[in-house]
Structures are given as structure tokens and as C-alpha cells.
Image (cartoon, rainbow, N blue to C red; front, side, top):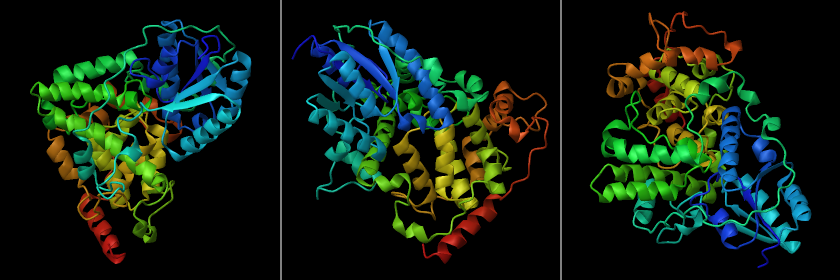
Length: 472
């Protein structure tokens, strides 16, 4: 392989330089490396918060690469067209990238690979976004897994590739024309909310590694006890970093496995959470309709409310349902860009069960609002909560948001942190909600907190009656 013709490394949701198989392979070849990020239609279609978070990630990643004397070339347009133009400009011999698994990315990448190869250009895709390729995990009968627990059992003893180091030697390519990141205005749709959310984001590879190290050192030993307590820092918080590949699941797995082997039994539950993410991708690969249709087709006959502007849905979006756990969790999302996992289950259950609203309404809203947005995890989470997805039973998953709050926030610390109404001196977290939300909502902290739009008992019974009427 000639060292004169460069290799284009097309970065997407893999914004790191350690344990980056694509980047590592290009550097190892000895060819000059040109790092590229393309703002194509898939980037343009991102929701406000994910796109804002991507912009922040690219800011940091540019600096990370610059420390290695590698330029990050930014171009916008259809991916194939951009790559073909770059190949002409640089006389590149190949294009390398990390695999993505959602149907739109697969279709794009398949077309890119075929077109480049037809033109005599090397086109290679690598793993790295997942620990196990979705097609590599099979039942004894050779099919897909539809339930998580057997999936976990099938992979828990598999070897996970040892993380790769940062390449020790990179042949630097000549600088070429690049668009300016600030001109892309990736954070424009966040408006004033971006300034609030930025205070809670931990962006970039270095921040992600520090976050993992701190979690393993301080929190993993009590993970089982604390992970469901929304008022505490009991989880790793790595979802925003994993979503954009600022850290690899392999790095997280090996850190968790070391803790387990050193005697922290709770680390196994952390490892199970990493595999839960893998399971979501397994389902998306084998049943891509999970992204936009009921995973269980029997649910097609269920009469959901599909009006995203229904008054009850608006109250849910605004954190004004009168159900404290739901409202606190929604407000946490607007301020931090994320939501505690227990809160996600509660708000999803309340929307789909108590308000009988289609899970796609909630999924679409989360697509817009989460900085840790992930296509597979978001879709599976919503369908799991709604009852239309894998390993879910609507009768057993109508969470009571009041008793859940009594169980996991008995002292109401979480509620006080996020709901300002009724408090004489509300904390900054609760007040920040009013700075982050759209001004058109016209909400103020001195308003009267609402009565429940649908109380827990009434909503549960209404949901059970609706399921029975439809034969579930």
C-alpha cells in the first residue's frame, strides 16, 4: 500500500482516538490520514438537542485531533458526493469508517461502499460502536434473540476485544479546505436552552474517560442500591458519551469487568446495562421496524391517541401533569439534556398507559430533547414501556408514579430539585427549567402547581380496561 496516497477516515458517531479501530487501521497502514466529518441529511434531520450535542462534540474532537497534528475536515452535502470530491482533491486510495446500524445509515453506507469500490477505491467498514456485531449473536436454532435475559446469558462470557491505544505514529496529510464548524450552526434549534444544558454536559473523550474512572472508583460498588435513586449520582452518566462514541463500550466493559473481578459484585449489573444497549441494536438490526412501528403487530389494532398537540400531551411535555415524578423527570431533561433511567420509565409509562398516547409521540419528543439520544435505545425503551415491544407485558408495566416516588424519592429530594412551584426558595436546578424551555410556553416559577390531569389510580384502571377491550 502506497504511503503517498492518503486514506480518508470518515468519522460519524465515533468521535475518539483511543480504541478507534477505523482510525487505528488507517494510521497503521502508514498512509497519510485525513479525518473527515460530513454534515449530510442524516445529520440535518437530528433533533435540536442531539444536534446541539454533536456540535459540542465536534468542537472538542477538532482539538483532540489537532493535538495529534491531524486536521478534521468538515464538509456538507450528500455523503457519497462529498467523499468522491475529496478523493479527487486528495488522490485518496481508500475510505474507512465505523459501522452504524440504523436502516438509514446502513442504506447510505451500502451505497457508498458499492460506489467507491466500483470506482476502484478501497472502502472498508469497521466495528467499534458495539461490542458484538448484531448478526454474530444467535440462538441455538440460529435465529435472533427476542428476550433480554437469554441474550445476556449468550454473551456474558464472550471475549470482548481489548481496547486499542491511541495510534503511536500517524502520517500527517497536507491540510485541505474545510468548512467552519460555527457556520453549521448545529445548536441553533436549541435557542436559549443550549446555555442551560451546556452546564451539565461532559463533552469529549477525555471527559468520558474521567467519568468512567470516577464511576468505577466511587460508585460501582453501590450501583445496585443507588442506580434507582434519581436524586443521587448513582449511575455512570456515560450515555451521552457512548451515543457519540466519545468512549467505546469495550472500554466500559473492561473497566466494569476489572471491578467485578476485584470484588465489586454490583459491577455485573453495570455490565448488564452495557449489554442492554447491545440488545437494542440486536433488535434494530433484525427487526428494523422497531424504530417506527409496533414491534408486536397485535398492537396495530390498539386505538392510541396520536395527537401530539392534545392538551394532556402538552401538559406532559411541559412537565405540568400534576404528577410529581413525571414532571420532575421531564424538567430534568430540559435542564440537563438527559433523564434518570427510573424517570424515563415513569414518564413513558404515564404517557402511554395513563394518557393512552402512542409511544411514537413520546419517542419523537425524546428524539428532539435528549443529548444522549440513541436510535436503538430510544425506540426499544419506548416500546418496552408501552407494552408493544420485546419482553413487555402491559398488565405488569403500568407503573404507579405516586408509589414509585414514595419508593425511590421518599424525602422528595428529586421533586424539590426540579419543581419550583410551591417552594419559597427553589434551587437553581428548578429555576433553570424556566430558562431552558421555549418562551412561548409562558411558564413561571410562581405559578400554582397543577392538580393531576389523570390521577394514578384512574389512569391505571383506564389502561387496563382499554387493554382488556382489545383482547390483550
